[in-house]
Image (cartoon, rainbow, N blue to C red; front, top):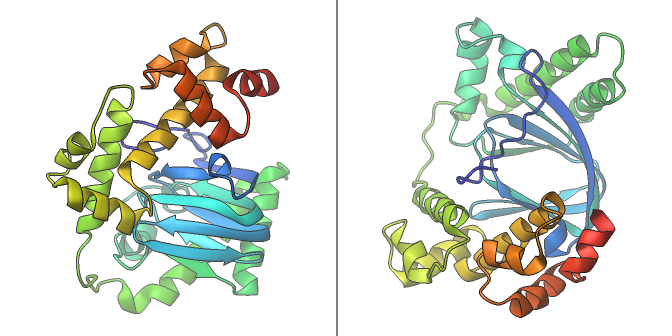
Length: 285
């Protein structure tokens, strides 16, 4: 991800901007899908268990059999509740429309993407769920001409969303997204400066807030304090470095991720990952 927690992983290719994924998640913080966003649409199908999906200021429980569509550029987080298995497809809307000048984009996709009421949409309709599974299996199994199959069935799903939300497409959402704008600015600041000795005051100032309102904003939107988020982000960055920088010693990684003392870092890492940094590197390396 970049410093705005935007996911930079390419999903598919330029000629076919679409990719399928499978994963399992428990209810440990270290097993969560961290707060992030991407320009592409994402469709998630929960195969097993229960999952807690959060977008700013809203929490949703997703059960086995549910299909969820996330609009592009929506900040989101997910964790097992207590355990889940999911499959997902992440794709550019241009996979369906070709470009932004076609009738498919101007008449259907653009109004949907810009709809204030379309952030997360849950579907239980069996025919729509089956359309997703057909697309997912086609791309996963590399079936003959899977590109046609995927585009056809994703188009059916998006058209279903359009029909369900048609009455809301041109209605502005009441209230405002002030908290979302503020939290995005503060997360940007943390992810840019996490290696530095940053303070609550500095985090608050990045969104032109006082410390008290900063704390309230974090609690309202993502359910934890800025200090808790900063600690978790530093630990997750360090875990990535443990694997990507095998020649770097643990004390160096701790310092690079904003920890003044390697003993404190190791203690917090063990609390978060249930193992020491050394064991984590050995098991996953």
